[in-house]
Length: 379
Image 1 (cartoon, one colour):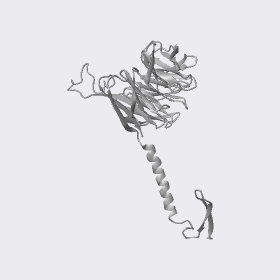
Image 2: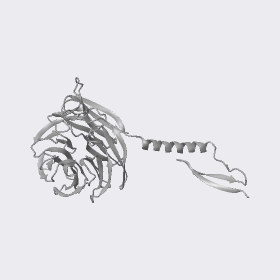
Image 3: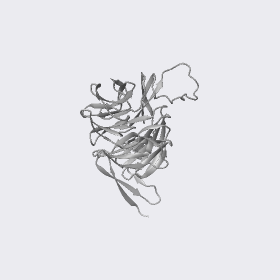
């Protein structure tokens, strides 16, 4: 067999290309003018890079930090204002404000309470879902006025397409629409049923959990009317949380009794999948950066659902949080999920849980003196 010359072109970073010539001889090992030390080093870098990528992808969610504030009163929703980098938690007769990055308490807005908060960054006006509604200045952290409304305000959302605040009620009128510039009532929308969490597509449609009907209502926000309602199917429970992949138009309805997440095509209303979650959900969301939906539960768990593709979904992880942490909000900058619950202050001996008595964790969100726990979950 004759000798054969093989040329291999090698290009170094920020350097010229060079040619490596390999001489192949019959019944002899191949020779090369590449220094022997370069080959094992290159192999090591490849193995290390591969290990780093797999380790990062497999790193689980966990509670990274907890902020505690002593006080009294019940809690419901937590709201992470990603533009203003603040977190709002109504409790008792005030609303606590935390820094979304340092996790420290900034202060409290007195005489502003209720279930949840919505913020209009442009006008620097905030609103609390109470009866009457509370309107406040986010920069001065002071109350501006009260707004008389009908129904039983619960959830609340700043809708970006109309630049208005939508307040959701368990009684008629189902939705009250507020102009955030001056706090005036623009109108109401009759949906029927008990409204819970809502999500906007930013293009004129609003999706709202109708808890007692096991449905999702689709609202035309400009015309302020109901377009349709999507039935969540026989396997669904009562939806309390809602995540929304706006890119692929996929809804994640977080339900209780039974405890499932119903994945729905937002355009057609067809059910794509039904997955198990923890017990006592009252909040959910979707992180487009990680393509993950999440549901926070009263039983002290946070369910993470991975969207592998627009047709493939799976429960990725069940994170242990704290009992009572049933509502949540997303810090989209840091890819962290913020949850809240309360812990009663130490007391004397209490009766054994039984008839008419709550088991541990059952009254964590109902008030009384104790710590407000703000949990920061991430990787």
